[in-house]
Image 1 (cartoon, one colour):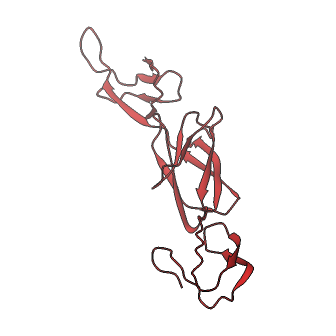
Image 2: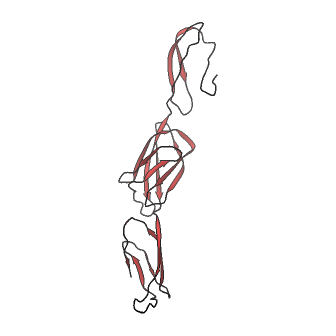
Image 3: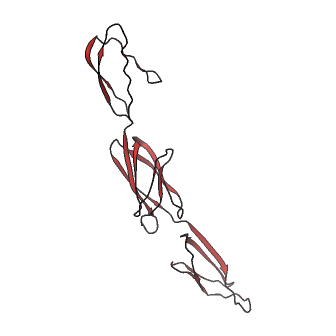
Length: 193
């Protein structure tokens, strides 16, 4: 029998030398020991079981370009386990405890991207689970009006374009424009009129 603290008692074992005792439980390595059972006394044998573990490897990718993201953090929600991606967006998290469905939630974050996660990531003992997380670039917007610098009159039909992107808009009858989903790259963007 076993109680809630993990203590066990086995009775009725015949007195003998070289008795093999084995402990088996889900999620832990199996341990075996050989002991001598002595008559008239309790023989104490404690076990320290190591959790079965596996690996989660994969990549964190830009959802627009499908390029790997360097310096993103992949982390297993509810644990202290995480890893930074390398220059190609690849990561490896070792010593992940075995878990079947429903599995872990794996989150990915980077300063220039919106955090996202995937769920039901399962891990088998000694095995590697490979995953890909695609995250969206953080974006902003730009709104304004184009006017004649001398008269202040609205200029309609002017093209407002952000250098280094395909983003552009034409001003309306009031000279107003709006550009959405501008990637936040940490770089200065030039606006051309």
